[in-house]
Image (cartoon, rainbow, N blue to C red; front, side, top):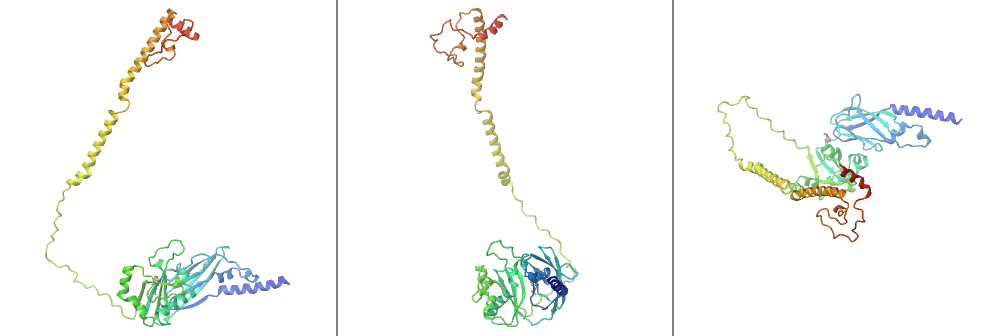
Length: 399
Ligand SMILES: *[C@@H]1O[C@H](CO)[C@@H](O)[C@H](O)[C@H]1NC(C)=O
């Protein structure tokens, strides 16, 4: 029973979702006014999971959108797309400038299941709804484009501007991220935003308050102060919607803009006559001082340092004087003692009654040859040379 009911249920849902998927979204937009279409993840979520919704289970999948003009790789020139994050809604926005029909293909990619889903958005661009010769552009510093495009925020901004303009016949003409105007990507810190330019138009003339934007006083103050954030009559009910007064301008389209003067055409032939008179070559400059400063002074310094180093290395080397004086002495002394010792040993080998060799005496200073007064125990009973050395001495003496 339950199975059967489920099947029937599923069939109708499938059919419905199929029909929904095939149905295009149709919207209309007047020329010269801001068009915003929000791609809501929530609605596409239902397209991906048509059954789950009915079982009370709702996913919140990350989704990305790819938008292009039908059978073209990119969007029409007037339309832009933005989505900050796969968990945020996307926005198609822009200001159409000519009537017609734009068919936009929207491909939705579910980043959890990697399902894709395609939908068509048909934008019928109608004729201009109302003339808006008086336009003004405001800079909102504490906003990002995605935070301004939702209709509630737009309405709040419009309310503020209506009070400043003192009219309710007001329409959005354009909303642009400051990044598209050469702005910089802000630091990823709280309180740093890209900034948004909001252009609004009306058929009502500017209020006194807005006209202050054109006064030379205002321009001078902005140049001096640089950052005059708020004007005398700027109104913002929400602080993040506040307008930077110095970056706001009035654009009056009612007055015809004077065309730039046409370039005056010549005959196309250069006037004859005259000779080319080349310029005198510039006076010669004396480079001697520069030469001395840049070449000679460092060279002299280098030579002096070289000489100093050479003197230190060759003539004042530590140990040279001492070695000169001492080493031969030591060598001579060694030679002398070896020689003396061997002759001493020879004589000892001949006669065993001789006094012991100097080197066997305690406290013998081999450098000076100095020795302490002979010990009391110094007697013929002490062997002069260790017994194990005797054979050598014998062999020496036998030679
Ligand atoms: C809207 O702003 C964009 C980006 O700055 C610009 O390219 C476009 O021409 C503007 N459209 C109108 C109607 O001002």
